[in-house]
Image (tube, rainbow, N blue to C red):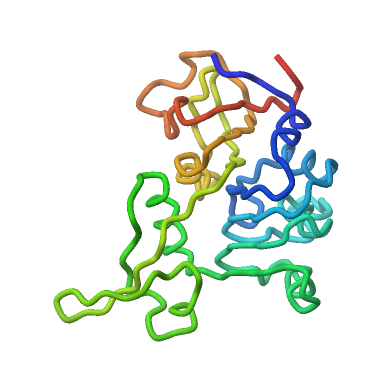
Length: 229
């Protein structure tokens, strides 16, 4: 059995200055309750690894949707992402010098996280070669193989991963609904501490083994939106 905690308890686990992976794509698949609690806690100086910075408004009119809450509160000092154009506050903070943004091609980021989770030394890709991406801090250098030049992208890991699953059982096994699987699944492998927010906390056995997308052994804490259980 995994420890089931509240969103507030989950936020309290994350100290100022931590590196945090946040699953989701434009807010879809964000752990919304945990991110809201982290925003309320005002924990700052964070390095965040996420596909994007979500949006100022959610699909149902929510203000500062998902990760956008932390951006708005200026709790992030460094954002490693694949695109940020849907959140204009990112550009504002970049321009005033309060937020460092590192952009990585989306497929490369997914593979770099996978490499971090698998213990690999890096990823070889032609994506970004000969562009400003090549000079990024995440690029170790280049290598020529069979007459083709590849960038050597370093693996990505974090202190914490905040992920979300549609069904999570009491041992931490996760099933993701639709496209919410996005970065959540791979991020669960690449952090020292994994916090998984459950849309639905279910009994052991409710997720049949062949439908488990993230095994519970990777999950340290389960967040129940209803509080401790």
